[in-house]
Length: 381
Ligand SMILES: Nc1ncnc2c1ncn2[C@@H]1O[C@H](COP(=O)(O)OP(=O)(O)O)[C@@H](O)[C@H]1O
Ligand SMILES: [Mg+2]
Image (cartoon, rainbow, N blue to C red):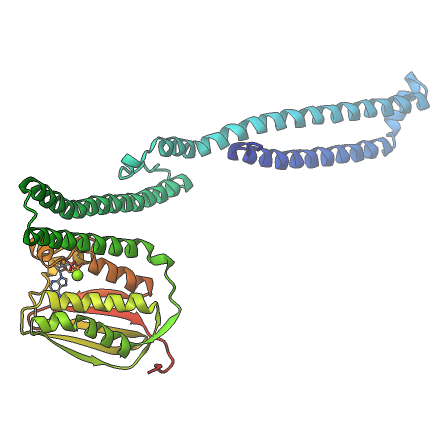
């Protein structure tokens, strides 16, 4: 492939073309007016005194021939000089343009060198912004903003992988220790074997739940979102799924849903609401009430899941939506959570053009709001 021409050379050639055109026009007009002036001079009749003087020295026709020769020679000299001047001006002009364009583009060259020196490790370090305030400064600023964003993504990915590895290590360590102990004790009684199998099954379940949540979180963009579903069905199915857990701890689930048609991926939306209800039941005290309400608010449908649990400290209300974040690490781990549920809810909400947040609740407990865009048509209930 042919190497593209540098910007410096392109600007120089463009200026050279313009300069040549101007010089040519100027030279042609100058020469044209010189010819016209010479013709005019030649046409002027001699004064009587001049005529008398010439008649004394040479014959008149000879004198007139001499004058016309002189004018023609002067014309020829003028053409040659103006051509030489044009070539000299062009050469000087081109040289100056090339130097000046180079000088004007020098900050861009410096910036290119600095950007080339960057590696993924020093993305957080901004490049120096030239104080020229011109296009080079704008490019440097845009580059710094982009590398800041990239750096944030890198940091998030690094933390994500670190947390994921940490979460996987715990159940794997439990499995390794228990199996090692079993082998060492050589206690193959049915009771001991059953106990080991239960532990292994529990940890494997935990690992596979984590893998499915991680896969869902990373493959969300591939899901379809063309289905239409009723808000009532969505909320009721989430309440039904959490019912056995709630019953086991005498928790009452109250449902109050206004009709609305939602568009999106029914399975993902069901999972998002289920995660919120499951959390409400999981973190609430026995005998309390979990309230699930759905109502329309203009273009939006809001699903509110309120509980009477410990609530979320205000400073952590954003962070609980980060993958692997838990308010009380050991308690959540005991309850079997990897800290991915709310991250998935947020990803699903954003995938549908909505949002999820936790509100300050009036009494004790938490109040999660899942906001989804509404369809305008009546619901298919
Ligand atoms: N309804 C709730 N009440 C109190 N704390 C909650 C509630 N829902 C979520 N949390 C806190 O937010 C953390 C993140 O929730 P989630 O992502 O679902 O993870 P987990 O797998 O631990 O349930 C939980 O560990 C818990 O500390
Ligand atoms: Mg959860």
